[in-house]
Image (cartoon, rainbow, N blue to C red):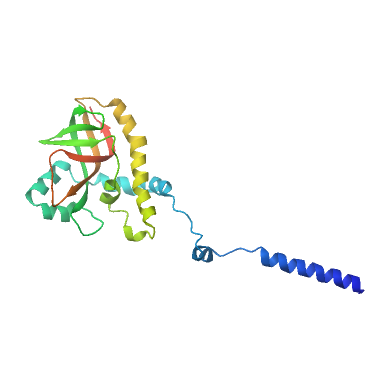
Length: 207
């Protein structure tokens, strides 16, 4: 082989080696270690649990009138039996369901008479963590990033505001009977059981 051919072969080899070292696939664990984390899609997560796990736990929610009676009789026991909380403190979240008669349709809420109790169903200010935390499905320790954990509540609330509330508001009127499922937030140290505020996850006009 002449000298020119040898130089040409060496050149091709060098180019090949450079190309091999400059283009490669990085393992997933290396990408995660380098900080290239896969972003959490809260909306997709909520869509995934909405019609299955989330709906099932709310179908088993205590009747709100019976829950109120339990809270009045023994607040501590009712909090321990029915309430959910992220940590130690006075705030508890409760799943509830019931049927009530519409007594008022206001700009921000709908009032229901449930037995001897007046219940306020929120239709405007649907915020906070009540639905997420009362479900007992989502644990803070499962998420390294608190923003991912908080985004679950944001996506749940957004779905309620955009998909549940508008249709209900367009039809509901005084005198209707409404079946609901939802969540409430209560403070054990400053318990107020008059006109409890419910964040709804289902609303159905039955009459």
